[in-house]
Length: 387
Ligand code: FES
Ligand SMILES: [Fe+2]
Image 1 (tube, rainbow, N blue to C red):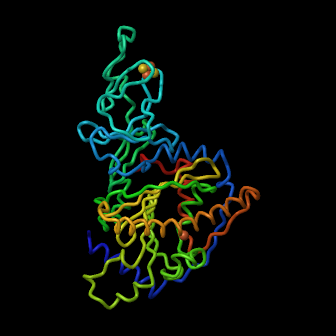
Image 2 (spheres, rainbow, N blue to C red):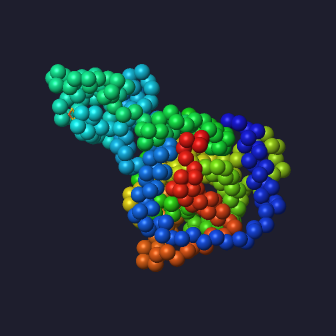
Image 3 (tube, protein in one colour):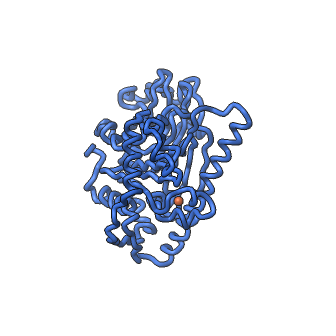
């Protein structure tokens, strides 16, 4: 853990609390058609969910060589597979003969090659074509031209990222793409955590509204009055935004107590929640002793699949530990359910009252920046190959 980096973040928080920047008071309008249009979602699927790295899971899901999991939520059928050589790779889950879906169980372990259920073409765990039944009928078809279609795949701080568009493989630099996030994320040493529980919810709201709901602290005191609201300093999100990703520190009231204690003992996580938003749809909520990774995927233009994985320092060994993590999970979901209920109320309005702008104020700048970023990508002004 880089403590100096953490102290710098804490200095930002104290500065923000002691001499808050006066809000500029400027408001912006957002056209709500972006949350109801199927045409817009089709473009987003193509240009955002397939042409950018998408976090599809955590690497700890692939403990042993030969383990795999499937992912279909970008629209591209993806298999992420840890090869016999220990390398994590991603492929299109499709046979190169006549396109049959190869692996069908959501996750599993491959003892041998992948064998297609149609005519038994086979592929090894590195995706190479290994066998063709009656191969005399397929002159010129070989490992070089008919292995599984490989996707750019890379593991960073415990998350597996895949670029679903095979045409973008090797066309950008992973470190450049993620460097804004590394600065914040690495501070907390979460890459050694293990997944505890995963959970999935369906929210009747556009995926961008679900992301927007985490991008400001303005709602905490009101929307989370019955749960976590009273622990946090009112309306005090400290925002960081770069070219793509963003982070917010939500200071808890307890932070003011440590101001006059020795700096060496300061731990930001104990006195704030930190939200890291990896463009476009991954959110990591860093809490005092664990983190939640949340993956938000559009089901259609009006609903979102919210999938979360809890990351804890080590697997629980006693009932007491299990109860402790379950309690933490419940606290998280109680608050997120409150957010999601409000997202559903927004979506319900927009579904019947299209095209009327909503108002975004000074405390909600990250929402505006995120929505503008989506537009920039859709207009072709920002591409993965820029990184
Ligand atoms: S479709 Fe896979 S072997 Fe024929
Ligand atoms: Fe919230």
